Length: 144
Image (cartoon, rainbow, N blue to C red; front, side, top):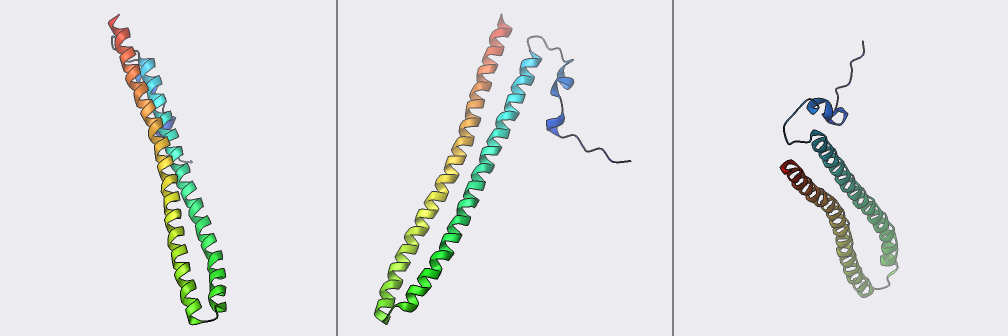
């Protein structure tokens, strides 16, 4: 007999667990709907974070590919430099270019990460504000 997979938290129907719960002044359906919205917000925030990680990884791969291509050109230029003086000048120029490119790449990667984090944070912040509004509305309804 095949073993049944364990149910995950997403498979559970919360209304089954709290459906019979009768607490005066508490709208169980509203509470359940709110919790669903919380799970949806967390799921979306995780998706945004994952997309950010993917974007960083993709850009890192592009940077490595570009660096390898440029290394071949640089090696050829160094071999073709005519005098030790010319080689020294070219090496200095290359070191400066590599340093500036590395800083630009690091800045770009940090901006991608910051954008992803901001999007996820804003989503969760909006949901938190909604939860507070839902609580306030629930309290107002219970008062009447």
